[in-house]
Image (tube, rainbow, N blue to C red; front, side, top):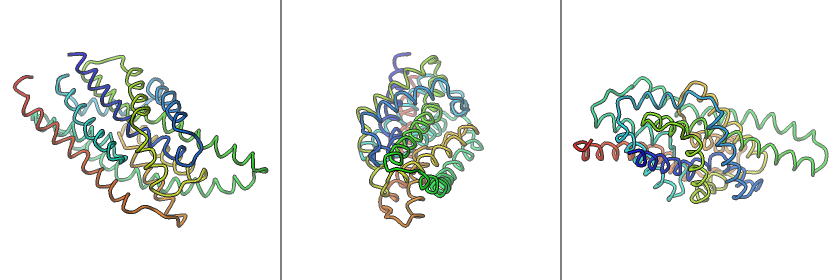
Length: 309
């Protein structure tokens, strides 16, 4: 059974890399600060660091929601959530892997007639609503502080170097958050299935997902929502990262995707730039469809196979 759980955890971590990595490096790639291969290396290094040394109560929250489930049932939760994320990645949409996991957990609990901690679910959903709004406000505040700082830098070369390093650091910070938040979800479920000591393995699986399948979602984040130069890239990425870190401290598994989309679109509206409202509507719809699909898939699979557990 261990190999089945390991395979499901690998699939989920791969799906996180295919979709969520764009939320950490999409602005850097879209603004031309780093290339795709460099972004994969950045994700690999800093996500692994976040997984190993990052401190977050997120995995504990997820483990609590999976209480009473067997390793086989948790395997189906991982499979259902990963399937929803993979479909969205094929479509090039930055959905929430966190929402997919929560949806799969609720669907599984209902199918198994286990109690659902609706109070915790309500806190998590509230954080999903607030995180893009908070990220938008933070990105605007950072932008307003950042521009006067850049005006004091003398020399075009020094200015370009400063901007590139700040965008890189913001992306590294966001990648670290992926390790503590999104991968914290996968680790929490893996621990519930008695799969311990898998942090490095899960981080490597995510890196592989970034390498093999993330380019389309990265371009959606980096180029299609709103125009991004180095200044906007840093402000939106750093604002989103702070919003996610705040949720990590509270143990709330929020979506870095919702945060970065909120940050980019909020800053774009503030600056009076073009914002792709049709794309934003499509992304918002996917935030609803993904947890519903994952929840329904987990519910029906468990109902069909429950006799074998």
